[in-house]
Length: 415
Image 1 (cartoon, helix red, strand yellow):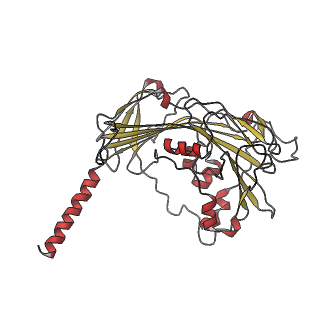
Image 2 (cartoon, one colour):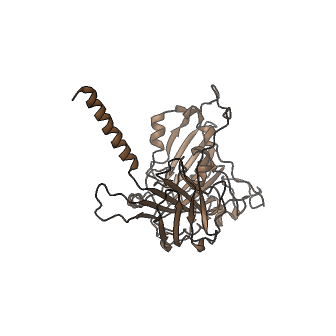
Image 3 (cartoon, one colour):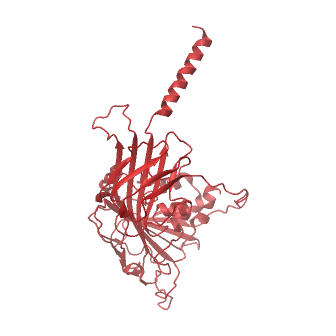
């Protein structure tokens, strides 16, 4: 065979392999994320939403805040559909059980990324200022700060390797709703009704649309329903240690707490202070969201997250006593439901392929302020020696003046 013919044959083979690879995989994939979110913050209404907060601002805005449970309060549902035959997206329908109290179905619409208006970004050469201050990291439940703490990151050094090591995390978020181009989402601009507080996912579900297998139907049992609302309560002052307690949640697989605040540093620059309930140094960036079952088991073994039987934890005294304010976040990890049709065999062949797959992830998050009694109903000063004549307890009190990490870390990223 001539060289030209051989090359042509190899090209045909490569094209065939590529075509076969594109045709592999389930005809449809479906993801559902269930979240229950609760916040107790002075000056904030019981219903509605707030921005992405401290972490949301640092990690990319309100979308991140919603995934971290820092957006709308109450029960939240996000769904995403991918249809292999329609890589640009397809309009679909998710038929839901009556217990959802949201009608008979949810409309799934193709995700279309919004184009940022030209010239919208104001950043330019010379605008990035060198960051100042430090980040202090504490960890572990208990009355007193443990030896070897805190870990300190000096922002002025701009040591990228140290920065990466400092913010490494034990978390490994599982794959779920991400809002990917070519996928279809709920909620969307045409269907964004609120999930009622009495909504239940228990019952029969069916997903339909062009290219979606007629067999994409599944049942959700009580073990994979929404988790209860996190009811956080706090007792004590930061200078004495803050005792945090919460309600035990049936079906929760573990808990994790994280707090953050700000204080004036030794050189007058603002320090960011972080604490987590982990037994190991852990900032918690990737732990405040869904984790896969295998990852949860690993984190429990490592004592990075708290056992499901745990209902209290003390933030050690002296961490936030000089802080201008401190916010506490908690997450309860729920189970994960993984489905396929046909069901995966115990000993599946290497080339086994289902018609469709579906995944349901579940979590519950809570947020409150440290230095308050009963999770925010009686605000108390966060600084030592703060005047009792402050507006604590008065209607309309504002949340603490937490640091703006985007501005603080701007120089590190050169944006």
